[in-house]
Length: 80
Image 1 (cartoon, helix red, strand yellow):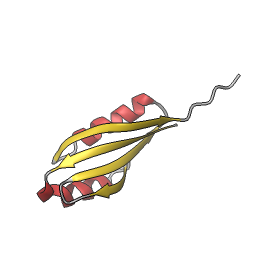
Image 2 (image 1 turned 30 degrees about the vertical axis):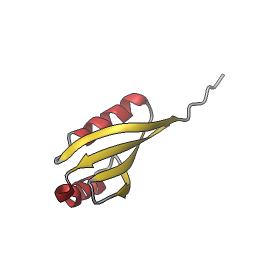
Image 3 (image 1 turned 135 degrees about the vertical axis):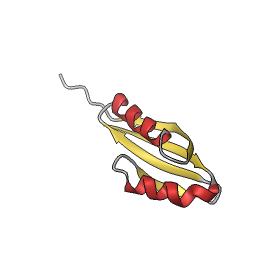
Image 4 (image 1 turned 45 degrees about the vertical axis):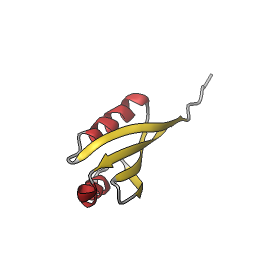
């Protein structure tokens, strides 16, 4: 399982609309936002490929200026 945090930037006047879109989605969880239009979300995936698909969805969300991964955690276990 992989968990990553993403910083999203939008215009302050579009903050409410972007938050509504993110909260209605089934691929991320919002945790923090400020009046400057910065939003912190987390995404989860079984592998890096799944996370990258979710990151691209965030980047294509209406009124999102940027969405960049800032932290990634992988909990992989090796089974013999």
